[in-house]
Image (cartoon, rainbow, N blue to C red; front, side, top):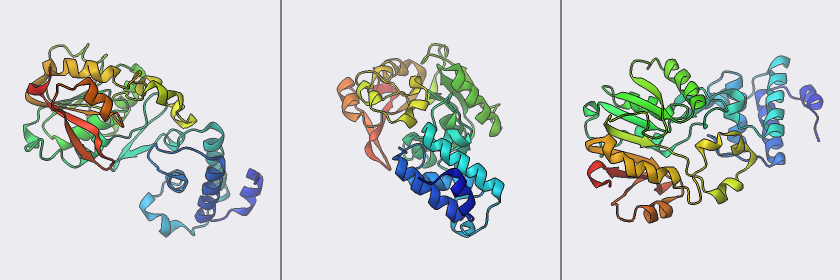
Length: 299
C-alpha cells in the first residue's frame, strides 16, 4: 500500500496525480454516479476542479508540474474520498448539470436529473412557445438546479422552488443568488403544495424521492451522505409521487404540464396510475425515467 508520504515524494505532474487517484479509487472499489460514471472521470473532476482548471482541457495540462502544496491538497482530497466515501461533489462543494455549475453540500441532493436533459433540450415539442410560459413550479427543488434551468429556458417565467427541507432551501438560495435570479426564482418551504395556496402553473417539474425501501437498504455508502428525505420513496418508490399526481391538477393552468422523474420506477408508476394516459419522455437512459401528464388528463 502506497502511503501519502510516498505519493508526495514521487508524484510530479497532473498526469501522475490523476493516475494515482484512479488506481486508489479502483483499489478501494468506490461507487460512483453523482455526476461522474467511473474512477477516471471522478479523479479527473477532483484534480481539475481543485486546481481551478477546465475539465475539457485535461490533455493540455496533463504534463504540467504541480507545486508541493497542490500535490498535498490533492492527496488529502483523494484520501478523504476513499476513507469517508464522500462523493466528489460534496468534497469540492461543486456539481455540474448540463453545463450549469451549482454549489452543493450534504444538506441537499447532489444535482442529477433526466429532467435537466429535457430542459436543456427545450422541452420540444411539448412547449412550442417558451415566451408563453409565465409560471413554473420546481417541486422538491433541493439545490434549486431545475428551477434555475427553467428560469433560463423560459425568459418571462416566475419560478417557485419548493421543498419540505429548510436546509435544502438554504443551498437553493445560494445557487439562486449565484445566478442572480432572486427576482425570478422564489424558494418556498412547502410540503408538496401545502404552502402554495391556490396558485396555478403552466409547468410543474418534479424530481422526487423515488428510491424503494429495498433499494435504500442496498445503497452504497456514497449515497448515504445524501439526505434520506430526498431519496426514500417508500415500499414501491411512489409514496410522494402518488400524492403529487392526485393534487397537481388543481395547481396547473388549463393545458398545463406535469413532468415527473421516477428513475427505474416506470412499472410502479403505471401500476399506480393505470387509469392515466402517461406520456413517457425520451432521455439518454431511455423512455422509462420521466413521464408527462397534461392538466386535463389528471384526476
